[in-house]
Image (cartoon, rainbow over all chains, first blue to last red; front, side, top):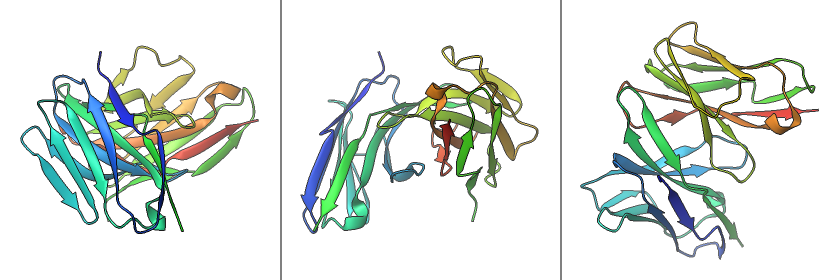
Length: 114
Length: 112
């Protein structure tokens, strides 16, 4: 069964601190893995995308890693800001011909506080 | 900027009163998707269009219909909204065969 599991479910950190979010998946065949940030009441916004051959991808203060052998990914946020408070969703994609099929994790709810 | 636009951002409808949500895109993508996302849950794919070819997910209720009159626009029609249909509805697009989906900001539907 295609699944994406994320941990922790929720996280509270102080502004300026770093944090790491985890994602495990069983989706096959694997096309790519993407981390999205979703603010409350808004649509998901892509942060990073990684294919099978990529181990690390950075986007500003966000760094994603992928281990295709163990089917694990992480998202590391450096020097957190209040605006980082959001849900972070790990999404694994597989191509089905004309359209892509996404399997979503249930997200990690991050709260950055003063 | 090329983007996915959803209107309205917030929609209130009455129980049983048909409602239509709108999505438009300037990306010229072949594929458009509609998702339903309930609070604290992952988005759930309802259906997608590849050009005019409609593809329904097996567990999408008949209450949900969709129309795609042209490449740029796609509509989600809820024929008889129930209280359980209150959710965020997300529209997304992708290129033919492309795995990256671009999401709109969503329409939050309230059913009273």
